[in-house]
Image (cartoon, rainbow, N blue to C red; front, side, top):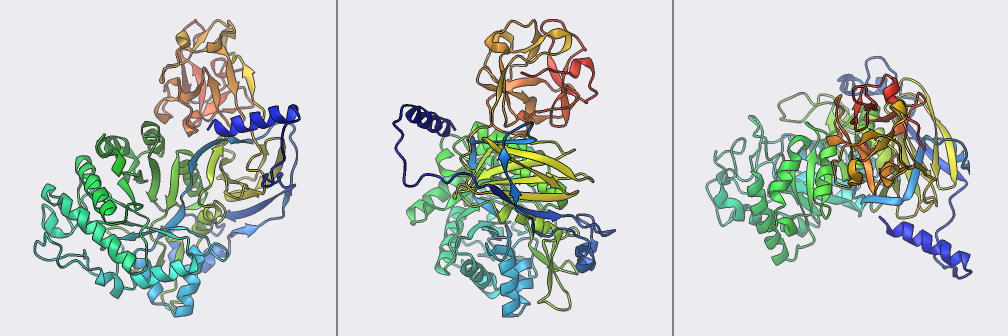
Amino acid sequence: MTRPRFAALTAGLLAGAGLLVPQAAAQAAPAATVQAWFSSESRTAGYEPKNANWYTSPATGLAGTPYQLSRQADIATTAAAGTATISVDTAQQFQTVLGVGSSLEESTVFNLARMSAAGRTNALRALVDPSAGAGFNVARIAFGTSDFTSHDFYTYDDGAADPSLSRFSIQRDIDDKIISTLREALAINPNLKIFASAWSAPPWMKSSNAIITGSLLDQYIPTLATYYRKAIQAYAAQGIPIYGLTLQNEPLFEPADYPGMRVTADQERRLAIALRAELTGNGLGATKIWAFDHNFSEGVSYAQGVLTGDARASVDGIAFHDYAGDPSAMATVKAQFPDKDVLMTERSVWGTAGADRIVQYFRNQSTLYEGWVSMLDQNRSPERWSGSPDPTMLVQSASNPDTFWKTPDYNMIAQFSKFVRAGAKRVATGYGSTGTVTDVAFVNPDNSLVTVVVNQTASNQTFTLRAGGRQFTSTLPAKTTGTYVWPGAGDAGTSPSRSGQITGYGGKCVDVPGASTANGTQVQLWTCNGSPAQTWTVGSDGTVRVLGKCLDVNAASSANGTKAQIYDCNGTAAQQWTAGTDGTLRSLGKCLDATGPSSADGTKLQIWDCFAGDNQRWTLP
């Protein structure tokens, strides 16, 4: 993260000395105008996000959707002046983006197979074509069967125990059109990356000897590693490279009515070691291995159980689902294991609240957002899940298979996938507020700055975005997500920050006890003395820094009374602060607060419901 700053500083010094030599490949200056696209929720009564009516009559709901990935007039930029709502620091870079995508599980494949050749190509282009479609560049498949299928449940080696895997075959995937569909998707988008997850090992590897229930038996861990390697090889032989795989879909859940398998963290540790040896020994060493693949709520402890010393080199990342817990678990794992990726591999989202959830995934260091189930028909078919599926991005006509509708949620996700390229770097911004707008920004490999801004409110929201010395202002309509592409602004640099004391209740200063730089040190009020422990830098990226650390909300909790502390700067929502017009300093929807209220030296600071009392008003540098 320091290299871009160092490079900029060096360039400035050389230029001042008359020693800067022009480079043939120098970055272009930021464009004078910014491109913008909008997508909105439907305004048709009864067609709010996630409503079942999207299956009944999609055309009715879409008729009331004002913006459907709609290009807006370009926006002129101006010299920076006044106050910016969103300040981008392109010199602070975080994770590299793998991509955005959805699944090509067998239910979607079945519906694609019902179409004519032209209709199927049209639907696949809507998903993966970078120009004519959403540009999804990552697709998830199931090794064997999942709960979303039109067929009986199966694995690649069903029957009696077969430790030598003599029966292994992916013929069912060929027969069920999975292979041919993936080939066509790759023909449309050769940059599409495919990763796999298994819902269950062959039944004979499990304690239940059944595909639906049971736990992995220890004695079959090496066999399962060979099974996965053979599956990757079999797909490669069909012209379909497998970029990566998760070691087990939802290893802490044992479904009662569809395939599943319990796998402990220690078993995944041993499985990762065995699989890495299988892959490396068979010329497949580049294949990614991702552990866990389950909920945020258990992710930190599970990752700690897998990424021990002997297995750490075997695992490339930790995958997460969003059905329990908070996305900050990804940032916690990334902070503990900085050499490993964290990835969001399963959760469909709806509306602007869903777009904001994707913002949170990326702000918490995820390299990926992956939706689940791309297209069911109007009867929510086919599937063998235990519940009633929520709307999919594409809904197919039950009577005319070549007809399908792109729901607003397709457009919401395309606001990310169509503009944020593989290899993009997330850069620093403040998160904003759900009461106005929230955001996340990236620098693409072509040096364009892409910022996705989300307005969940019922009113239009006007904001100003600043990068370096220039800015633009836009009004984002109610319940709308906007994507702003600023060509050439990827190296705009840092917007001005300011340093000094933060004063508050009783005229006291925000202070770090003992000038400690230990993570978790709770900040306090203290008599102002101008020391380094009281010298804060309020950044344009939403951070508030002292002694090389960031002001942070403990465990990203928004509970009243949660301590305000200092911690390693990581760009998460718990370290994003906004100054209210009422003098408050806010993070995670709560206000920085002096406990008590008291102005005594040593009074601890916390977050609390905002009421703009004297103990919640602060004067920034």
